[in-house]
Image (cartoon, rainbow, N blue to C red; front, top):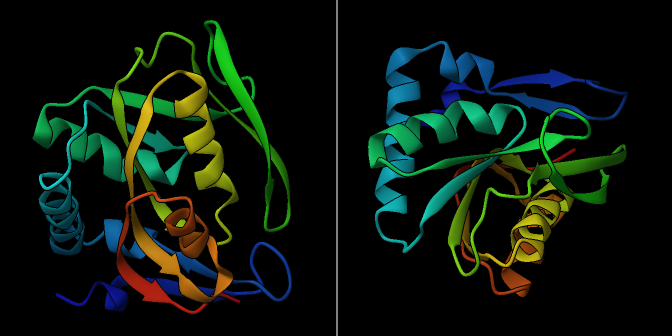
Length: 175
C-alpha cells in the first residue's frame, strides 16, 4: 500500500510558505490506518525497548495503537502545563516558534529503553526534545518511528548523526 496516497497536502498552513502534510486523511481510512500501525509494529518488533512514548498530539494516535498491540506501557510527551503530576520539562525550537515538552517524572525508570513515535519529522526540534526528556529521566532512547519524514528539512539526519535509530514509513520534501 502506498501511504503517500492517503496524505493530504495543504499549502500555506499554519503560515505562508509551509506545505502542511495532513495525516487525518490517512487515519480516516481504516485500511490505510491499520496498514500504518502494522508497519510500525513490524519495525518495533526488531527493536529492544521497554516502553513507548509519543509526542503530542498526533503521535498519540499511532503510538497508543502500537502500545496496545505490543502490550507495552505508553508514555505521554505533552505540551507545557498539560500534565497534572510532577514533571520533567525541556524547552526547544520549532520550525515556526518555541515550545516546551514535558513528561511525568515517574514515567521512566533508570535504564529503561524508550521507543518514541510521532506522526512527522521535519527539522527535528520536537524529536530531539523527546530524546532529551528520556535521557534527563535516566532512560535510553531505543529509536524513533515516524509516519512522515520531510527529508530535506534535516531532522532525520540530525537524529542519525546523534546515533539514534530512526525509521519513517513515507518521505516527502519539506517546504
